[in-house]
Length: 78
Length: 405
Image (cartoon, rainbow over all chains, first blue to last red; front, side):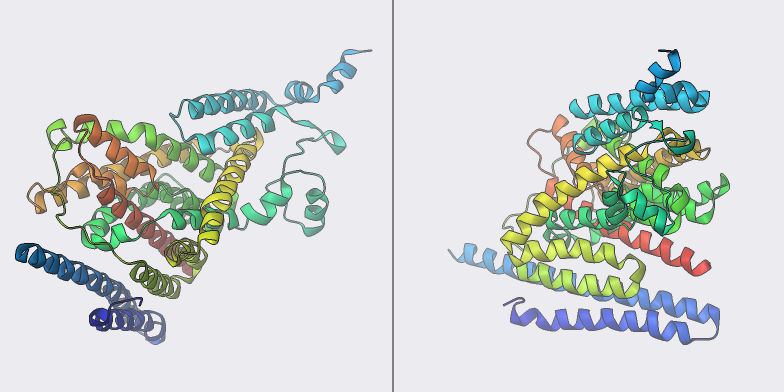
């Protein structure tokens, strides 16, 4: 299994957010007539795209934290 | 037998006598510089993998000049400026390195091959474990890439040339090569040569910058150890590489070959494809590095390298690397204060993405004052982020400047 089940939702959300950012920056921004709004939309799209990638990284870190917590609890119980 | 006939037997010397004094002095200087690069490479002051083929190529191309048709001076190595297809077809059959140059160097393939090898050596797990500190410091270490651009423009360089030389601040050889090929074809030889010469210097120069900016007490500090380190699975790393590569390629299609090359290396590594991994991290990486060094040396012919812009490029190149190094350490200091003294600012230098040299420099500098301390995992995370931020900046420069045309 690539990604553990409880964390798939974070991965999917991150990937969808990222591609939505790409869509905003590369599809919506170029068709906006006002150059200032177009530039702002492009920047907004880029931020959303990178934010999505960070959400995925958050998922990885959340799994690491959860596992560390489990290990600590096991150690304490032993 | 007259003197001319004797000189014709030794055309390398005859062309030296026959050429303009500037070119003759330049050729002699470059032969000596080639020897010096080999010496410094052997002594490991500079990166030997690049400097030894580069130094020998530089010395040979400036020594091996002969009279061609019509009394013109030239070599049998390669012609970097030939563009006419018929002329190119003829030259491909004469100059021995022309096929390697035309089919791998002038189209950026060699940069992508080196990048594939770098990708195969990268463990993105270090970045995934500490994403925020890694990206934050790596962004600071791009200060030279950003600040050199206006300085270069103020010094009279065009936007394209300024962007290409600014990329030296990212300290990523393939990236500089790729950007200069895309943006300033007329100056890509001197820019790439300057970049690779300076990248060799990072190993020797950055330790002094660290000593200058970080007091011994802070350098020697110990960072908190992780109690139960949990590994990031190869599946997670692979999925991250696939999504990141797709998103970055969609956002910056002009740099898609670089992103693909980097992440294909990561994907092969994390998929456990041992045969491909061995191929990419061995023969492809070292073969490409060898030919890159050799071609860079051979491109350092006096006629090509004695460009009036070279002095400006030399100043801007060192400035870019210096500002990036300082930026990285500033990023390290900010993390040091934010974490209340739990982050060693020396690690900031690893944000200058010369993989893995700057990470090793950080580790070496810390070990000089605290032999037990291991900071390499932190430094590698920042190093990998540095590669990604450099690629993004290269993509931004290429996209913006191409769009401005």
